[in-house]
Length: 434
Image 1 (cartoon, one colour):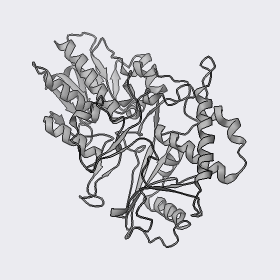
Image 2 (cartoon, rainbow, N blue to C red; image 1 turned 135 degrees about the vertical axis):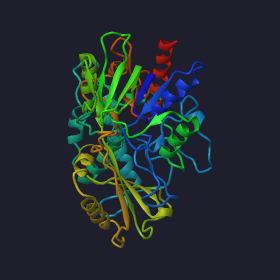
Image 3 (tube, one colour; image 1 turned 90 degrees about the vertical axis):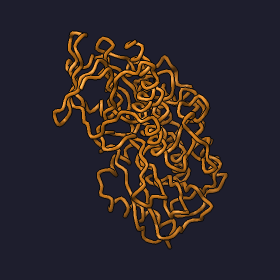
Image 4 (tube, one colour; image 1 turned 180 degrees about the vertical axis):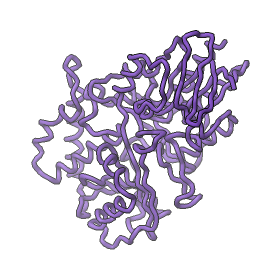
């Protein structure tokens, strides 16, 4: 088959591009090809593991930066079950505990929070004319002054808010690009009762996009003659031909060179792919026969060096543990049984009467061949400018790029980031076709 446009990847960026291409009065012939047996990419709502009535998001959970300008806003129908939060802790009921189950006083928490805020001020004041270093390096001296072991763990928990948001440890993150992923857009997160993955699926279904699943593109041949068509070859040796292509696969897959280009990608493009950071955040869902914690709490924060952040679904007897960076990568190497055993042993020190779990689910986004990680960040030595190179077309304006990592001028790392790039690049391709 011959197309005007082939979109590679049917996550939020690919779906947004398809919607934009459909809007054109002289609708081009296009196809969205997806390697998985489902759409949505890193937005995926599981409706089988626990109960169809208990949807859980294995990847992206929130619509970040929710506001009228958010491209997902026009697709959202408000529900009285929607939950909006303004930061990681938020105003929802939560409890702070030490590793032995003792309650951490508000005065202790405020002291730790103030120390962490002073760290972030120091990072923000890091001179722009000096060589870039990690965030950890900037705060190291002040951090080492903390002598009290409990206070250090409390400060570590505050530091971990940033590590979870960036899906990487402070040792990897750029001091000069601290919190640049939000591009100065205020935090406002919307949680949907149906699940974010379901929401994205519904958007695609409503627009009846031409999507072909189980289509793993392995090779792209771009002829020197611009009048000849680009050839895409799949893992099972099918071939597709197109005037233009839009690549929306995750940065992790680009880093792993899951698609071979002939001729090879320009050096500037490959360097940008190699240099941009791609973090890892995993979740562990654990269901118990009863809710053994106080049902009023929506989250449990524990001053631990390993397991810190638990979101609570008391009505379903489910705890959700968030893991990031090195710990998330290390735990991916363990079996589900080993992981659950470690978590249960850890929680028993806090809740001695806790029953054995009855069901669980562990995500492994780093081992997922069609993700290779979770979302982008700025490692040491990179700046926001790198997103321009990631988004820049190549091969004489025939190959275009979209995804949460390529949203120059906007936010990075979120579903709305990806959606914006799909809209933008589809518009540019339409201009070329017209």
